[in-house]
Image 1 (cartoon, rainbow, N blue to C red):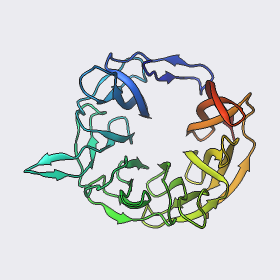
Image 2: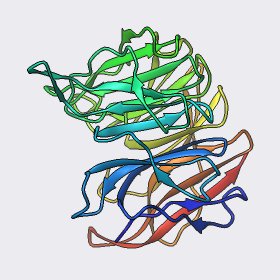
Image 3: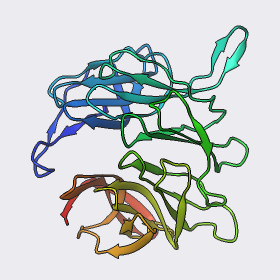
Length: 309
């Protein structure tokens, strides 16, 4: 079944499906700034070119292929309607040796791309990039040996110079989500994979563009999605660590890190949250709804929730 992007122009109350080029198969992510949106994914079986980026500059009315091929794209973010960044996961052969993945930048709404000065990313899992402004961005990566986040770079020069750092949680299997709200404020959520806190969730925040971080444990909840309303308030969602446990919605106060558990929007099954997107007035959460019986889950339908604050 081909993938689709649903577009809403009334704060998530109604939705319509976008029409894509025939190459589009499985979608990984979508990012928007103004009327410019980019979506990344893999092509349909039997279609030449495994990975692709599709772009729109009219709010999703029409979509076309970007020239960003054939790199393997791990993540993408648009900082303005013209400037976008993407992580290139392909290990390309250069002068007889492998060149590790790097971060690419576009200054024409994703039509053409070039490299930034990011250090090589020697990882085996997709790195993630997020920007709070055209000059301030953070990149995280997963270490191949441990599966933990021990690679983080930040820039305050739009990618011309990068500084290495780390998020202060030990044995974290993530972050599953990372977002920057302004030129200096970012937040991240992940999970702990090593004793004595294996299975716990972790939230972290920075007020210094990724140079220094503070973290807070989220016991029994592993949050896999995160959205920020402004530079002081974010919302994260995940499931309790028990098999097919219920969904949990929490409000994260950025500085100092503090969590408040909220009432999750009512549903007729178990919600598996996938993504949160927020404005300064409301948030929209999307995911999947499941029916669970005797430890077995059956997919029921897509799930969308909206709340104001």
